Image 1 (tube, rainbow, N blue to C red):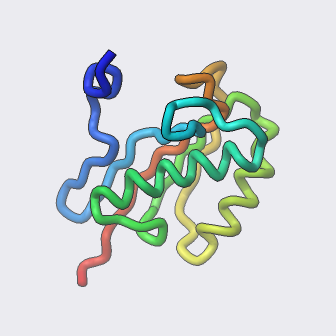
Image 2: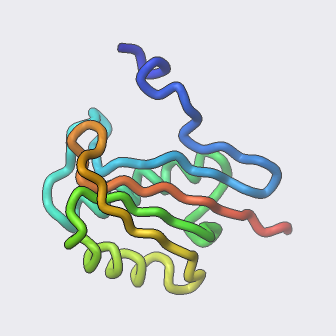
Length: 118
């Protein structure tokens, strides 16, 4: 299956000064699930950061995050990641348990960012 057929949506969509980032999974570049709780959180954040950057954004621009996880006990790891990367801007956040995620991932993060008008 081609990349476009499997991923027919935009990884990130910029509309004026808003960026809408599609869910980024805890997978490596070959779509293999990343193992380990902290490692999975870091992988999903890195994929999300990459998508955000393609539309001209950075983590400081994020105003809303949604975490989808296959294990609700990952909340503490999500809180630690949030404290490390988002405390300065303190975006809103949702944390949702899902029964399964694509490619066997354990974490998916989507985001909304607003670019400052400079």
